[in-house]
Amino acid sequence: MTRTTPTGRTTPVGQTTPTGFVETHDVGGSEQLNPLARRFLTRLTAVTAGGMFIDGYVFAVIGVTLALPLFHRELGTTPFWEGMISSSTLVGIFVGGLVFGWLTDRYGRRPLFVADLIAFVGAGVLLFFVQEPWQMFVLGLVMGLAVGADYAIGTPLLSEFSPRSARGRLGASLQIAWNIGYVVAFLIGFLVTAANPGAWRWVLLSAALPAVICLVARHGLPESPRWLLAKGRVDEARAVLERLGWSLESGDFTEEQSDTSDRFALFRRGQLGRTVFVSVFWICLVMPYFAIIFFQSRVYETLGIDGPILTALLGTIVALAGVVVGTLVVDRVGRRPLLIVPFWVTGAALAIVTFAHLLPAAVIVTCFFVYLFSYGVASILCGVYPMELFPTAIRTTGVGFASAMSRIGAAVGTFAFPVVLAWSVPVAMAVMAGVCVLGAVVALVYAPETAGRSLTDVATGSLGVRRAPARTR
Image 1: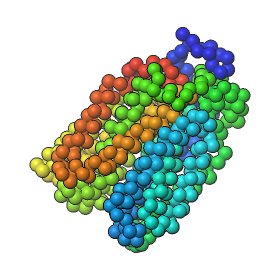
Image 2 (image 1 turned 180 degrees about the vertical axis):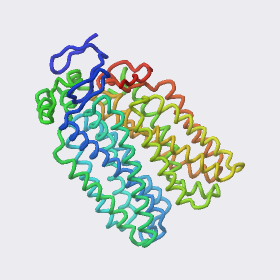
Image 3 (image 1 turned 90 degrees about the vertical axis):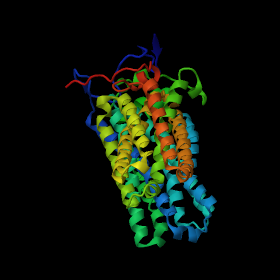
Image 4 (image 1 turned 180 degrees about the horizontal axis):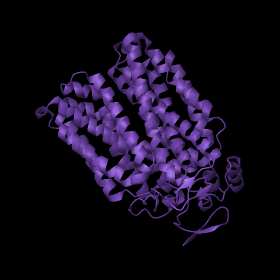
């Protein structure tokens, strides 16, 4: 079976070809980037990671601000508005991922990759001047829309420029940026408000600074040649590649198919299974995490552990360590093991915590740290699998939809967890352990191995479970 590409070339479906922009290939199949390609890819990775940094940052600063009694007194918040404000960014990410993912597949990656940060910066500055709870909610919603758009745009764009041999590592590195953003914002917010609780406006305003830096750095980025090819704009794709010192014939660009898929393509035969798998594993991964990390100091207090704030910060650093480890090995051991094994470990760790009333505090803290480290390892696949499993014509639509579904999971965890926790700690932990086990079963049955395969091969070929290709030296 063959496919006809926009360039008029006929190639076998599923043919293994290199991905990205390469100069030479050694006998082991590894890819060498030319110097210009390496510089561009470094820049693109940095500005994409900047969006993830901003997401982690704004999540933390809003959480720190909501913990301040002075903030609630000055704005006159009620329990209703506290819930609305805490959920505003999640709601925004949900809508932003759905809407802007589709718009990006329709109108291109480049314009919306800049526009979303302009909206974020504007909302971030206006946060300094809020006087009413509804204003805080609206601005949080706008920032969430921008973050949701960036989720749907940034990582697919990076994958469309990445070489096969580094695609997993580059996508995974974005999760490092999210965790660093969270830790940095947590530290800044905690230290500033501890010294001067009245400075909460400055803490909120600080989220605009990394966004401005990232916005400037994104100026002048080219359009994705894969998206141009999917739209049949071959000459424009060729011009983009030539500017970067590459050719249309390098890698698997000539295998890109011209496609005009509609917005319902995610749910048609051949794509529905991919859509369901990505959405379900992402939900099962983030639901327990967001519930626990948002309320982890309260969890530790409930369990009778001293120093809950410090313990929560250490837990975040442990999760970051897991992300780093996962990033280093994702292209070596493959995607499938890094999803299945951590899911089972997280489920086991939380299951042990259900017996907290029988265990010493040291064991409980250790289990939480094991959970957070394992989560960190698996979380890198949120920046890898979704970008690989959808074809170019609907890639940002697919990523946006899956990220939106994950935010439903995060919202359910965030709202339901404290209610169940107040009723019964063992039940709350057992439910979250069950979610992890569900994720493990789904991954065991459906997770494909995509390491070492070209982007067009993964997105359009068979997804049968198979081992990652052996690395040769």
